[in-house]
Amino acid sequence: MSGFNGLAIPGPTNMPFEIRQAMDVALQDHRAPDFPKFTLPIFRDLKRIFQTETGHVLVFSGSGTSCWEAALANTLSPGDHVLTSIYGQFSFLWAQMCERFGLEVEAIDVEWGEGVALDFYEQRLSADKAHAIKAVLVCHNETATGVTSDVAAVRKILDDLAHPALLMVDGVSSIGAIEFRMQKWGVDLAVAGSQKGFMMPTGLGIIGVSQKALEASKSAKLPRSFFEFSKMIEMNADGYFPYTPAVTLLHGLRASIDMMLAEGLDNIHARHHRLATGVRRAVKAWDLTLCAKDPALYSDTVSAVVVPDGMDANDVIKQAYSRYNLSLGGGLSKVAGKLFRIGHLGYLNELMVLSALGGAEMAMLDSGIKIEPGAGLAAAVDYYRASGERSA
Ligand SMILES: Cc1ncc(COP(=O)(O)O)c(C=O)c1O
Image (cartoon, rainbow, N blue to C red; front, side, top):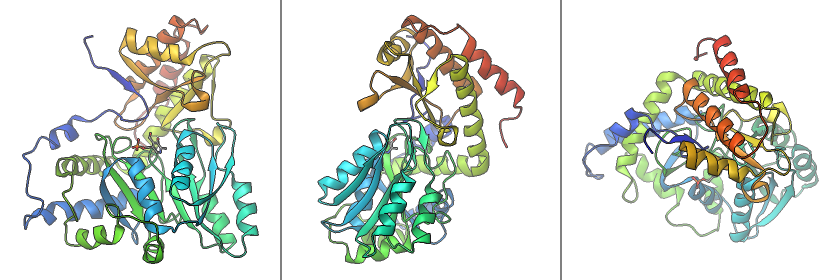
């Protein structure tokens, strides 16, 4: 098929030419004396993206999942209690990883489309007078359902109760795209990957680590080797890594950070909000609903669109890909076939979103879903035209 593939999944996202070009470099000596000139500013600037002054941001070769593991393995011991809420495939998978690590998982199953279970957290943490719960997990942006949860509210519960549990946050589909304040929200472990807000290829797991998490790592007994924080921090201090880093990807990361800082985090968040609002207007005009139950939960990076009963969302995805060269995200696990997802994060503008909306309309019509042709597109077009400049 000629023309570009429309990449409207919630990661990997579209890669800017600047990042692609920045990675077209000769391989280099990662132990060279001038290597730190390249790496130290990256470590410094990542702290601006994560919004932490006191924490460290570490870069591992891996993906978001690797940093889930890094967070757990560095700070917890076998049998430690962790508290979590499951409201989508990614919160489920992180909880499953906790079990595989021999942790005692206390999880509440929340209806998919809802967010983190604040009441349950409050109730369990206030009953936990002995402070047996060592970590509280939150998936900030549940990519499977298009739900953004309130991390600051979880922090407040912990603070109000003076509960010392570590706050671990999955920011894989939020960091670098929507508001994420590691230090202000008291996040102890903040997990990200390179292929979403960072607009890069998959391959880097990026994790913010607070001083409190580092302190916990001193007595944590879970085995770790590759992901050992202390060795990484020690070597990073001089601009090096304990083992061979993905230098080519680090060049992409440099370009990615430069683009993000040039646009400004607030402007990036505003752009994502505006583009997402256009998508939501389209969904409303199609007379369809989002999986997210409440506007306060709507994600600005991904929208999960529920198809009418009796219709097959997988067919929409199939039609979109095979007829129009458009990649939409599928429904995962218990929502498979019930919804399709439009990713709207990273390197994106109105026209790219309109192309995804147009493709989604055609694919839905091909699948027999009764929407009015052009209705969603018109709603998004009207919104984008009326809401003026892209940047805040
Ligand atoms: C919220 C969330 N967490 C974790 C992951 C897993 O990350 P990765 O696929 O980079 O390992 C994903 C992947 O899409 C995600 O969306």
